[in-house]
Image (cartoon, rainbow, N blue to C red; front, side, top):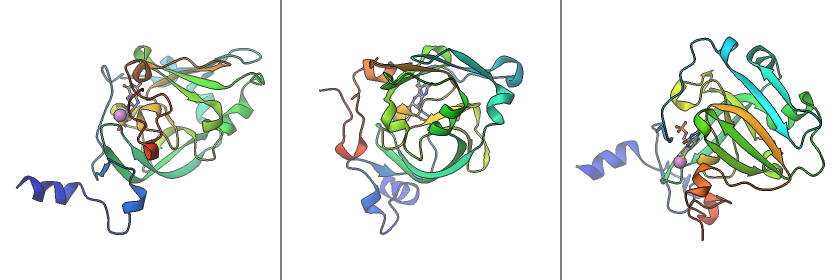
Length: 204
Ligand SMILES: Nc1nc2c(c(=O)[nH]1)N[C@H]1C(S)=C(S)[C@@H](COP(=O)(O)O)O[C@H]1N2
Ligand SMILES: [Mo]
């Protein structure tokens, strides 16, 4: 019974085995995973903004309309949660991270890390070099539609090549830093590098 269920909903498509990192299984569902409750915005234009600060020539705050007027890209990518589900060919739209940097004051050459700050104090840390990849983005659409609240509305990060916890939901701040600062799951015992292909799940 259980095997039949698993086979129907959780299977690796034939020929796609090489896209699934060790210890992961493919799901067609879109699980929801986070600590805490789902933030609800009644009027994003009035209550949401995005602050960039830290090793930047001056801090800046972008309001919702300003952010939504930035040019966007669409990225198709596979996502891998450390709890072992993977989802192939997810489609995201938003502002490419390196494009975003062109629209804010210059970041210092000392900058090595980004600390993403989210609603309710959640943070995650990512090397800046990882975010300079073509498919790293500040995402607000999934499969052509606005992100749902549980998946991160109105803005989440999409961090390529890392376990999905580094794709922070409900973004409110981008802290640029010369030094690394462990985020929420990283402090909790998860591996800071978080490469699914090396199965870097837990801290050594
Ligand atoms: N703000 C915030 N973002 C978060 C998390 C969280 O707890 N808080 N959990 C992460 C984890 S562990 C995963 S697997 C993904 C899940 O994203 P999804 O719910 O859209 O599938 O969000 C990540 N982003
Ligand atoms: Mo996760």
